[in-house]
Length: 509
Image (cartoon, rainbow, N blue to C red; front, side, top):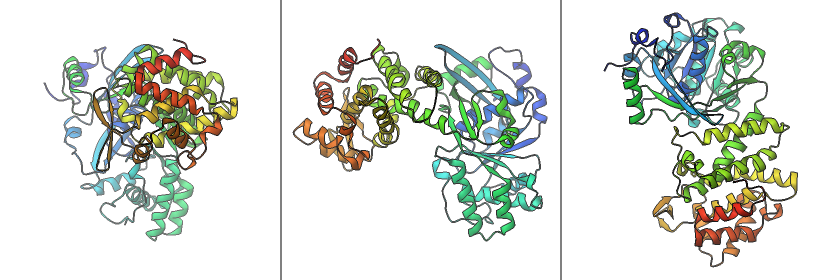
């Protein structure tokens, strides 16, 4: 079996199992520079560009810059920069699948070995857009020299690219770029812009360039939401390859759902015309509501469910959602507590619609999202995702949310370490140890040494240093938390959940 390459496409055009690009797409001009070859960008941003090209709307391809030393370019070269994207998920309660061969990438250039080619792209008037995903560590200010070949950091490389473009077009205002980072940090566009400007000053670049940088380039905050695990497991990869008749070392899998919210004005929307082809791409002047919905509903439910599911013996999100009790807990938590405590003006219809999408995603059997991975930095997630919702619910209704309170008790139980090995703390569940990867592991280890559960709960709930507030002042019942912990210790987490749901105010099983 040969690797995927362009000659395969004609044979596959009548295959109903895969969407194949037309030959005309390979003649489209390069319009986007992209920093990062990773699966996430190829599974989200590049997917939308590919979809628009197939519909004759955007009509432009992507030059990808490989910024790291890991891996090589051979797979891209061997496969004519084509790759298979298999999207699998749940929509309106039904399983959905779509497989495409993406032709969005025109070529891949190594920043380390082909920096002159990268700067040649800066001189291309057709390129109007830059994407990036260099991980959260990529958008950091480090001392950098833009005349290095290449500069060390991603912001340094971007600055060198923009400076070359400024020189090539004589500071023409129309030569500026729309720059859309997808790194998972708040205000990623504005943070990147501030670093690039600081580096411009440190490199002594002329004021006319700095004015052009600020006034003629749009650094857009963006919010991305799609699970892209990357390479599918061997059995799924083999099945797809046998079905389509080729090997593909660049194949990636993703969930069907996708969201890319980009902060921009009318001009940005015109340039990012690929946004027209999919409701998952949203360009608005303020995307804070989308961030809030994702943070509170998706991430908040993940956080309040992770310890509960793991301690109940469910390795993945989808497996837990097959359990009637856990599914009921998550559904009621989302719809009756988290969704009604969004601190933004938003309609009930909108939060309920978003909640339904989240529940579909949780049920996706194709994405092996592991609960133990979601427990990493559990305490920080409780602080950023749960406590604000807790505060808002109490402010709105004058009582503590009971499902959140139960989830908080499970969190305390998950943080109970039974073994310490150096600086590592381990809990015990379902016959095996698990590593507590949390900066508060030592804090909880100390608290669990107390002889009285009541004393421990009292100290934890009232600790403003940890939570920023005294949780007992928000109506959290110490007696209830102690009761849940006692039950989990004696009966187990699953039975405690069953007992909780029989008494919970709005449990619907």
